[in-house]
Amino acid sequence: MQKIIACDDEDLLMKIESLLKNVKPGASEPGESYKVEGRKSQLSNEQLEEIERRWKAYKSGEEKAIPWEDARKEIEREYGF
Image 1: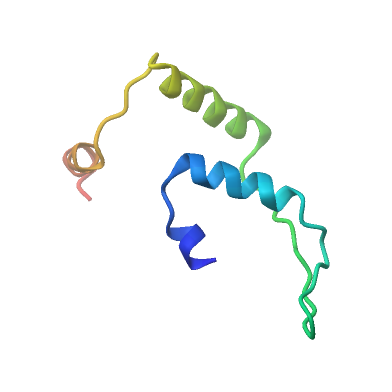
Image 2: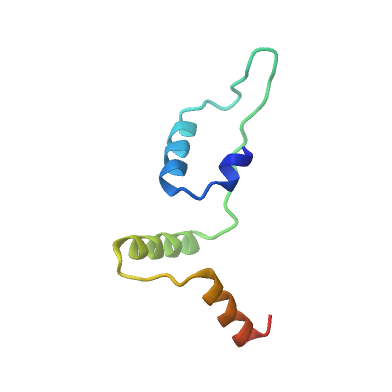
């Protein structure tokens, strides 16, 4: 789980997600029992749609991203933190 959390390879994460969709809740290993719990997003449908729209625009080259360091400096300059 730690490796998945730390992973930033989008293609690999998509493959993992696809594999996990086939895991039945309540699956267990010999001698163990556990339940797979889903998590409801804390974002609204509108927020999720906006994230999806922006992601598609970024992937298509329609929108460009800026490096985190530049964004961080802009936030510090604009908001003082």
